[in-house]
Length: 513
Image 1 (cartoon, rainbow, N blue to C red):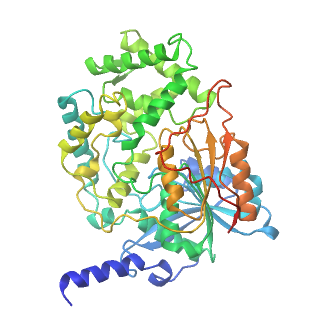
Image 2 (image 1 turned 180 degrees about the vertical axis):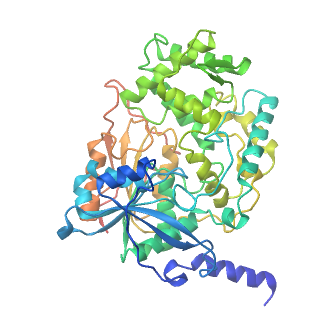
Image 3 (image 1 turned 90 degrees about the vertical axis):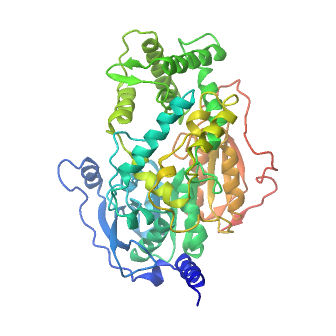
């Protein structure tokens, strides 16, 4: 057989290989969660009555009996064991978000926790699951490219530095960090748990992971809930590229209620732009932290994920602090702003992006020409002056030391799922959520109209929480429907950003799974 043909056959076999055929399931040895008194998450899990375990999985499923790593699990058993119906696996997104502590959310969804074991699996190389080491002095690579070619060059230098910071890992591990392998791990865990099928709740990137599992192992999926879906066609190193318009919309929504920054929303937005331009001209101090044209837009970006009143008020306080600092006045950051800036400058925070970057770079190849990013930024700068240079900026994947081991997964399946979303989601725009809805042809969608938040489950919208509960308990998927945001201003008109296609929510009857 010719070498290229043999390689293609091997790749196809690896793509089709399932954990059940790759390696025998091992019994799970459950134990306490805390590794010591300093393990705050483990201590909290133990106090709640959770159990923890580690499951060995292949690094490379093409070589199932070769090198292995472990993935870490936490479990809260169903509180009504006589009526238990299975397992719900949980994922918070990221990529790079650890999942074990999510089992503590059972208190917020008691009817679901009564009928299901809740299981959080830290994805491979994340949290307690054989973590990779990336030597970064920051929590995230996300920065604005700034106003000029010179400041863009500073972004290029940072991206190179961060890629080098991950390059000390074994290349075989970096190649194995993909979502497809995490989906294979999920299926191996399903088998180890003794479950014929598994249910799932995933948010943000977790929707992509869930969709990849549905594509690869749809016959083993029970009831899947995907909250704030990413566009499966654009997920990868450029996943933020479409977000500038939705970020602008969320910023304007906040500006309508911001106190002390202007009499009108336009005046508030002018204040925001003035702060950003001041940071571009000259860095300024916020407490002990120096901020500049790269970091100020990120601070705005990071504060737009939640439109509920407490979060909006915190954002207003942050902008007031930045305005004072930009004017050269003493400015003491709030605890939340201090934590954000400390993570940006020292890497002291949750480091979800640091853990998730190997996943993003393993899933889809990035353009390796820096000027391609600069041209893209310049082409959109007039329409996206604040967030375009951030969302379209170069990433460490442009300098990643290894190429993806497999092509990205094409999501096209009739497997069913319940999708949740909001029309003004700043991080996973609604058009991309509708793209996921179309890719999962058997799915149904609940949309929170007029909301500007990322993730909607357990955020105060009863229509969403009721839909999730009813679906997980009954298995019935109702027709697509829309509900009103609990955080909307009374006078605000509904707003939906879509891509101009016909709304796939129309004309659907009830489906049963």
